[in-house]
Each structure stands twice: as structure tokens, then as C-alpha cells.
Length: 144
Image 1: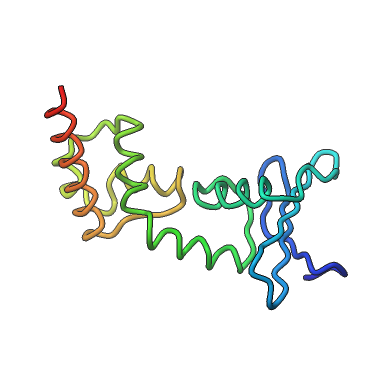
Image 2 (image 1 turned 120 degrees about the vertical axis):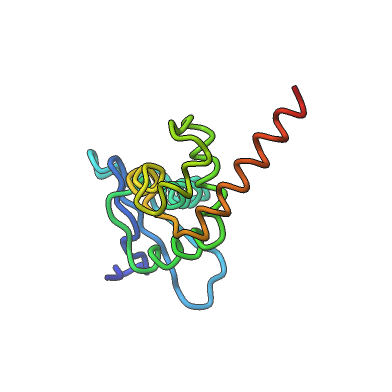
């Protein structure tokens, strides 16, 4: 629902509500970021845009609008393989790399991805992640 100045509610996080202006013909997205506790405007500029999309990318939100659901699907289509690899490497996932395919889509990595990043991988995507992890580990061993 738009208000009189063209802004619609776009996202709710633990601490902030984000409103964005998606007026037709504008190539510059404007975002307003309000503190949930006080209701005061926190940012009305590029900081608010960057913060909103960072929260969208890393699944740090409680609610998003249909517009942002579409944007998130686009982001994931482009980034989720690398995000899954980075998650595996950063969190020292306790399974062995060879178990990714054995565990399959119901395995521990997918459960962690679902709860922490809001997505799961299919079998082919798991295979791609496994290949990237092996390449990354091999490269790091070469530089030792």
C-alpha cells in the first residue's frame, strides 16, 4: 500500500522498517529506514538502500514485500552457490566434504542453509558447491 509520497513498506527486521519508493520512470531507488522502537527516521539515503539489500541478501529480515521477494529470488539465482560454499567454509561445517552428496538434499548443510540463509540446494547445486569447496581447499593448500 502506497502512502501519499509514493513509498511502500518493503521490509521489516528486528530493529527497522524499510519503505521504498518505486515510482514509474525513476531509475534511482529511494529507501527510508525507520527505527521500530522509536518510529524515528534513521536514514533516508544510500545507507538505507545498502542496508536493506544486505539484509535481503543474507536473510536478516522478518517480513519482505512481494517486490523484494522477486529481488531475493533473482539474487539467489545468481549467488546461492557461492553463498553456500562460503557458509560451509566460514562455519567449519562439521561434515566431511564427501558427505555433501551422501547426505543429499535432506542433509545437515541444507538444514543450516535453510535456517541461516533462507534457501536450500538441489542435488545439482550441492554437486556444484562440493566442487567449489574442493577447489578452494586445494588452492589454499597450494599457498601453504
